Image (cartoon, helix red, strand yellow):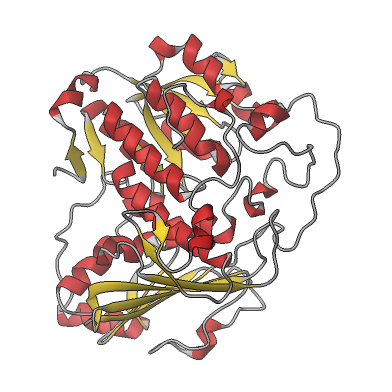
Length: 449
C-alpha cells in the first residue's frame, strides 16, 4: 500500500491515465450534494468535467450557468451512451434509491465510479455494487469525507499504543432527521414542474405522484427512496469506530423507535449493535446509536451536562461520538474532526507527558476531499482506501440498524455470508429491495437474483 492507495489487479492497470492526461468526469446529480463534487473537482488540474446529468434543471441551474459549455442531460443512460468515449469516470450524487442502478450502468460501461453515501439503499445492492466493480476492474470510492480525515487514524494509533485500554462502549447521537419522518401519509398529487422529470427521478422506485413535500430534498425520510437518519449520518459517524477497531459486522442488533409505517422511517430511533471483537472487554464492543433527539443518559468520564442540548445553540453538541475504553474516553465529531481524549484537560496532560504516539498510519493527501482522492487514484490506477471493497460491508453494517427497526425491540442475529438473519426470517425481506426493480433503468447483464 502506498499513500493510502491499494494497487489494482494487474488485469486492470491498462485503465490508468498518463501523467499529463486529465480524468474526464461526468456528474450525475448536479444540484444539492452534487455541488460538493463541483466544488471539490472543478479547479483540480487533474480533472475535466465533461458532462452534467440532472433530472431537475432548476436545482442544477447554478452550475449550468457557471459552466455553460458542459453538455447537459437528464437521463444518465442517454449520457453514457452518447458520450461513452468522452467519459472516464462518473460521480453519483442522487437520492439513495438510484445509487445502485446508475452505478451498475456506469460500471457496465467501464467507468470508474464515485458514489455518495450511503453506498446503496439495501444490503443486497451494496454487495452487488462491490461485485460488479471488482469484476470490471474499475476504481471506486464512496462519498465519505470523514474517512479521509485523521480521526479514525488517531484513535487506532491511540488504541494500539495502549492509551485507551480495551473498548467498552461507543455512544453516537445525531440531530437528524432535520426533514419529516414518522407515521406520515402519502401526500396528494401536484402538477409536475416543467423543469423536473418525475419519471427519471423515480427511476426504479414504485410510482408515486409528484409532490414538493418530498422532492427534491425530503425523500431521505421515505423508505422507497432514502435510508432515514441513520442512512444519512451513520456512514459518517460509524466510519470512525468501524475503521479504528476493525469492527466488522455486529453479531446482534436491537432497535426501537417512535411509530412509523411502510411509507416513512421513524422520527426518533435508537439501537444497540454488539460486536464480537478482540479489542473489546471480554471480546465484546457495544455501539449505541441515537437519533431524532434521543441521547444517552450517562457516559463514563463525561460531564452529564454535555449530554443535554444547549437551548441557546441547538447545533452545539448536536452530533457527537464518545468511545469509552477501560483507561480513557475519546470524543470526536461526525467527520472525525476535533478528536481528543476527553475531557480536554486530560488530552493536554497526555500531550505534555509525551504519552501520545507519533503517526504510524498513512494519512490522506486530500483530507476532507474524497472526490479528489478518488480522481487522483483513477489517474494513478490504484484503489483509494474508501473503495467499494471497504464501503460495501461498512454500509451493510450501518443498514442493519434500519432493518432492526422493522423488528421493534427484538434482538436479531445476522449472518453476513448468507445476508440472512438466523433467528428472524421475517427480517430477511428487508435485505433486498422493498420494490421490484424496473429493468429499464438497469444494464441488461445485471443479475437481479
